[in-house]
Length: 127
Image 1 (cartoon, rainbow, N blue to C red):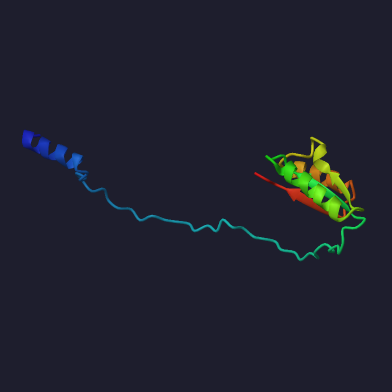
Image 2 (image 1 turned 180 degrees about the vertical axis):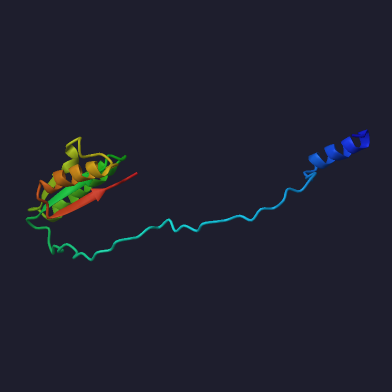
């Protein structure tokens, strides 16, 4: 290769110009729908209560910052407005004030909260 050819090839590489074109091959693509099949089923919503008088209210906290502060204040307000309401702070149990990161943890938390037989559950995620 002559010196001038070498300089031309080097310049072509620096400028991003291909020296020889590769033969183009047709590409084959397969279109895939990642959404899958969604199975829907109708459910009846839970019955709504009309008053908190004499009811049990469970307060649920997932352990994030200040969620318990909000729920504690809410408990005070509820007991002032509805003197016969029973407030159950489920987050006083350290096993329950956690984020439900797996289905098993979610199920355990749900069962523990349901065990107090609340008429209403109020949860605070906070952040």
